[in-house]
Image 1 (cartoon, rainbow, N blue to C red):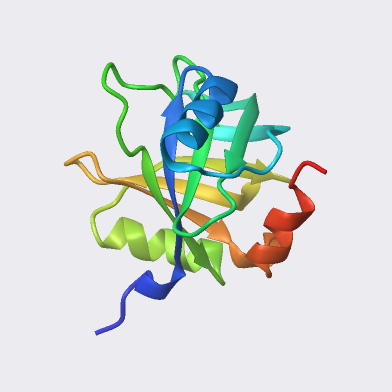
Image 2: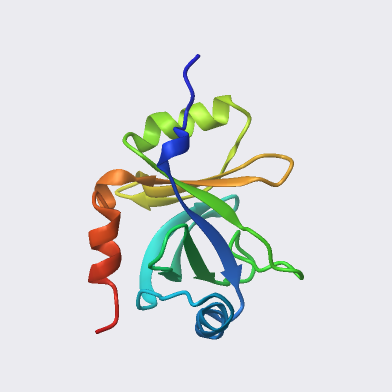
Length: 155
C-alpha cells in the first residue's frame, strides 16, 4: 500500500492565534520556546470562493518538535477557534500536485492552496470532514529546514 504522506515528513504543528507576538511571548514564558522572526508575505490563495491575495504572518519555534504560529485572518481557514487548538499538521512533500491528489483520494478534500502562475504551488491545505487539517509544503521551498530556521532567527 502506498500512502500520500510519509510519517517522517511531519515537521511542524500549526496553531492559528489572534496575536502572534503575544503568543510567541506566552509560549516562551511557559515552555522556553525560542522563535524565528515573524515572517510576512502576500500569497495568492485559492479558497472556496475564489482566488485572492492574503497577507500571511507566521513564525516557527527553533526547537523540535516545531510549532508554527500563524496570525489569524478572519473569514479564511486561518481563523482562530474560540478555544485555540491545533490548526494543522504540516508535512513536507516532493511532488505537491501528486501528494495533493493522493490526499483528495484518501478523503481529505482540498481546502485552500497557494497559486503561482495559475497553478497549485508552495503549499496546500486538505481538510478531512472530521476536522483534521493537513498542510503539505513543497520540500524544495525549504530543503534544509534547520538552516531555514537559523536564517530567520533574530540576531
